[in-house]
Image 1 (tube, helix red, strand yellow):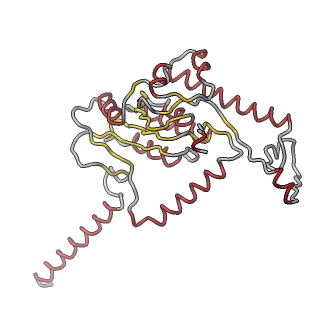
Image 2: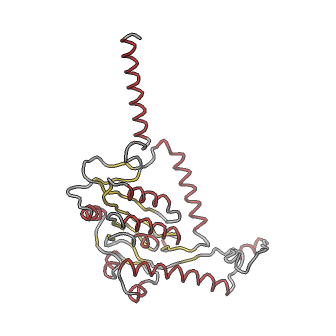
Image 3: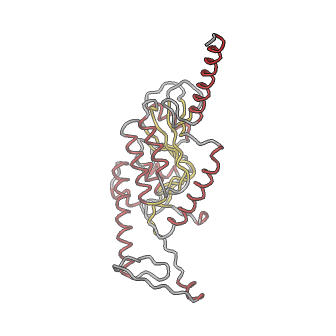
Length: 300
């Protein structure tokens, strides 16, 4: 092989290698930060996870928190909450992920416009909770809503017939009213889930049971009121929460804020499908399910 052809081959290999490396970087599959994107900077890193919207499926946020927890280059984590809460189990899963992370590195919960019910439950796993003075939080409680269509069925002449294996198998059937036995059955479930919520508030906030029970009636509070009741630690915004996380991690100077990897605009089809499926899931799970959820009249 001539020296010229050898030189051309080397150049071609270098070009192809560069293209492969660029593709890997753009795909988020290169180096220790393959799952995250970060702002430009050379300081030590603080991870930021945005929990926005109802909490019906927490897997995405749980995975993001776990990735930051496992990444040694992330020295602290800020959980930004802007959510009215959601399903009981999903809120508990999110709390457990926050708690796992706080066992290994500093974690700060930063509350936005709303961080109520299940979102407040999730925040309890953090080392410290920061809320704006006007944040809507609290709403410690459990709710279940049943959509009844019995009257509609009667108007259009529809009837349902159920064959079941046990008394409670179709409890909550929207085509009929609850029986007294079913109402007691559901109330027992709600009471147990409510007790779990109250116990976590007591344990994580170091409050007396009587003090928690006095505010655990579904009411929401401003951030200022929440501090007075011991439900929140500090009044401040996300900027303060990031600085507090950095300080707890021993970071000197301005930290680099790292966010979970966002898919590119080329994935718009997947994003659209995720959005539609997510909304459909919320519609389905939003009825006949038990929720740590705050619902204002303006959001119905």
